[in-house]
Length: 169
Image (cartoon, rainbow, N blue to C red; front, side):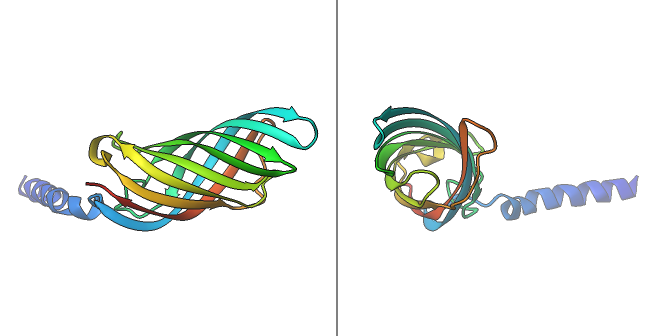
């Protein structure tokens, strides 16, 4: 009985004091590297042989971001559109990240690149959030890792990498 009480006491002690080690508090301001995996679906409208309009929806998960950042272990959903002429595209859209606690982070983006998995660059601007991310500001610049093949017909897969910064009032 005495041994069980000692184990119970030690367990409670480590849970109470170890919480700060295991659950780092989110920083109000910072910067860091970003990496995510994504998959998406799209609708195409060809306009002759040189032009195409594409609307897309993608979902994914952040696999690497600073542990104290608002995007650590977040999932996301993006809606976007692009217009391509002779394989070069420009586009824009909106992203919603959902943090593990349910808080949201919102951003708009613009980008350009080459169709067919070629290089691209997108610039994001954080425009708000909910809960602990209310009023978030900052930016992100992302590129893609080329050569990711779709896992099935009619979708695309990708890995995005880049850097971001944020400030929460």
